[in-house]
Amino acid sequence: MRQGGPVTDLPARALDTSAEHPWPVRLLSSKIAAYVDRMSPVWVEGQVVQLNRRPGSGYCFLTLRDTEADASLPVSMQARVLEAPGDAVHEGAHVVVQAKPTFWTKRGTLQLQASAIRAVGVGELLARIEHLKRILAAEGLFDADRKVALPFLPAVVGLVCGRESKAEHDVVVNARARWPQVRFEIREVAVQGQGAVPQVTAAIAELDARSDVEVIVVARGGGAVEDLLPFSNETLVRAAAACRTPLVSAIGHETDAPLLDLVADYRASTPTDAAKRIVPDVREERQRLQQARLRLRGAVRGRLTHEGERLAAVRSRPVLARPATMVEVRELEVGRLRTSGRRALDGALVRASGEVGRLAAQVRALSPAATLERGYAVVQGPGGGVVRTPDDVAPGDALRVRVAGGELAAEVAARPDGATPAPRTNRRKKPDRVEGSVA
Image 1 (cartoon, one colour):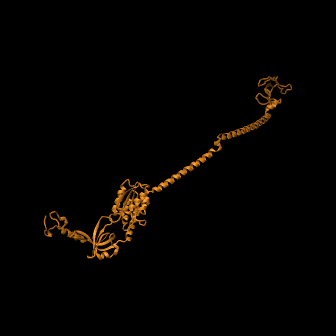
Image 2 (cartoon, one colour):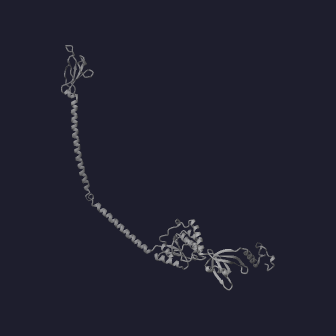
Image 3 (cartoon, rainbow, N blue to C red):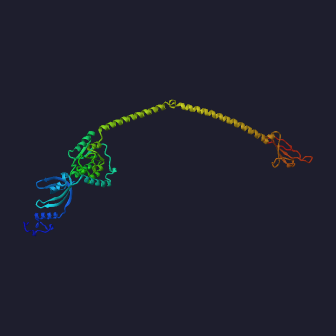
């Protein structure tokens, strides 16, 4: 490997370097510095950490850290640049810096040379949150139909909170005071600053993956708007929306409203309120059980008393006291109806018999048999026709003479005067017919 040598013997491009023809560090540093120097000034946003003021040198140094990722850059500026915004720039402040990147060849470090710095006001931060809120609302992440009901009595509660924070104490102590058997899976993470978003997001995902965790509480005490910014971060809000386990947001005080409150299944005003919401009060539940038992016992007793009274009223009725009463009443009624029916039938038969006798008398009065009984007879000629005049027959004709007692046979004889002789009859009695002959 060559030591030293004129620069003109070195490769002109990084692509042309090799193990036999490398670049010295000074050349690479100078090329990086020349490349970085061609960059234009840029506005950069971040959080101020490690602010160092050097009064004697007239320069100030700070580190500008990304609020969502583990990335930072050193920044240097003149004291007058830092003093221009007044007290607004301090450690932890959210700022935007106009700076030009500079590469220091001796130390091999990249640094921003700031020409202006401006604190990001609360109004601007809230405006950004409001813009993100509209976007997420349009996607439906805040819709009520996405929220699920919290379990009545979770056996295991996941808790995401700060390390040894008062929020953790409020949730755990109040929850166990209400229901001593509740168990907690606690994940202590950063709840503000640069590591809050990834740590809280990872803790939610870890607890959501556990099958025994039935509800997750994200709790943090109150603070300034800047301190609560991680809980309005888009990455964290979307991770909470994707959580399948019911999620309770207990961030800050009642007046604080980070976006996590809107996407959570339940928004608790404080960590203490979250403890009261995730588990029931054992004393209240016992009182409710006792009251329910008393109401149930009273309802059963009232129902039994009412049914007993109804049963006694039914049993006191005559039909059940003397069951034969109903049959006896019906028997008397049947007897009365039978007597009435017989009387009606007898009356109808008497009237019908009288009517039949009357009609029979009329028939007998009008019958030819009645006339025959009075001594009259009906004479029929040979053809069977009734003889009405002597001219209807001739001598020698056989006649049938019908009288009341039967029939007679006769024959027509001639009279001496030339008229038709009167018939003579020989009377013979028969059981149902009498026949005779006339000489």
